[in-house]
Image 1 (cartoon, rainbow, N blue to C red):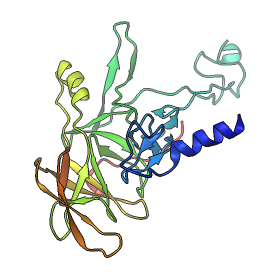
Image 2: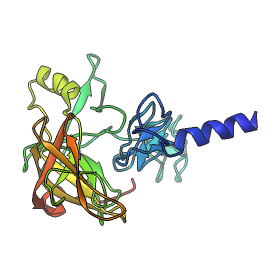
Image 3: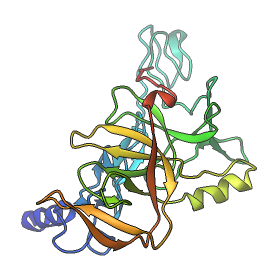
Image 4: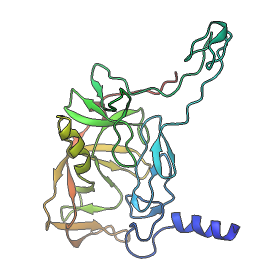
Length: 270
């Protein structure tokens, strides 16, 4: 039994021997290098061969899906429990500094929270796929964004529907291998819900390039037409070599965009 479990874990996160990682050969998630990962960490979360994603700020990865931590509510220090409210407490606080359950997204002066609202008045953050569990509308940049902390000096609200690539490898659109081609997916399924609500649709506006240390830099995104020549940098000679044409959605890196362009955030504890 232990041997079977060990083999299962190895198969889930071992590099792909032949061909790129995909749903037929990976039980976890596929990273930007085409390698199968276990898909159980906040920086590489996903399952069934989906693209690995980073969970948003304050979220965790569980069973290949990003979500909020289990909320625990403690007894108030000033007397009374959160269930009874005796001794001066209330149902959400004890008489002192009681713990609080996970809260809904809250709008600010720049970032406007996007919710799914039930007919009974219930409300929850709008999610997109497995890896985005919180979405804001950036009223300054007029785009949707999601909180991100990994690979950054400080958290920010990163544009939603981002294309991505790694600086030391991947595809290029020019024969000198200087213009990266990021991979990403148009959020068509999300746009259906947004359009039905009378909200602006989401588009790919930026490309994120990650260096060998895992640090991110950002660029404007330019759509690469299908059939355009594709190039890659040889890991052995560093030469820029042709590798056919683009047959999938890709976005080339345009102008450099400083991270300070996006809404700054910080980590706090209630």
